[in-house]
Length: 110
Length: 227
Image (cartoon, rainbow over all chains, first blue to last red; front, side):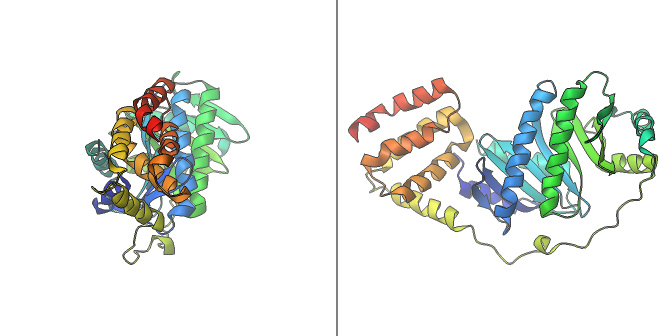
């Protein structure tokens, strides 16, 4: 079973610059980002909004959302039940490839 | 930049020029959904909800990061991407995953005569930082786990059972919930066999399904009764 320590390995994934694991009440469970607390509510709200898109789009469930930045350091948000995972990617990494790697990592935790 | 009245026509042009794009819509806070070219994927009211949510996400993120652009939401076989095209107007496209974000951006910019933003300077918060240590809370959670689950601990057996039972109901995040709940529980008072029912209640609240929750509580009844 996964613990916060297992999630700390996210920081070792190529293409991941920062990660933030937040509980749905905003409590930061794991991170390698100094400003995680300031970002946590945006991650949770983004995740909750995306979860609810399913109702608006005929039952489609989202896999992840990506907020793009001009710098290329995009922010990816994944829903993990009562937790939300925010990833800030390296500018030079491919977002889709990175998302696939993250999904593989999360599946391996099961 | 194009006049806003031309946006619906430009959206049609963009959809026509990119075969991987199956549809799109336009939104502004004042007008709501003023062009729905999704071929019946969703009605205007639902698309308005989508637009409000996604524009809010970008707005929230822009408080922290000052160079946010668009947003993409990836579904199994479809991507919904959105970008602000000026004066609070948003353009959304539904497309296949094979279409690259760069191609979309370029096509939209060309269609709407948008001058690309210059690359910003890195923000201080984005600069590489010295090696970071996990937060105090994470350290505490790990320490308390180590102590309470040590072989000599009288709590090891019931706690292990609780974690395993929790995993049967909430799956892979059970370990996380367990560690998290254990830390909160330990902070509230002295962890002891007597206080275990409180921890069980905390974990039960993490189980959404009422039948599962009941089953979880039932499976740990012996612990509760012994306490």
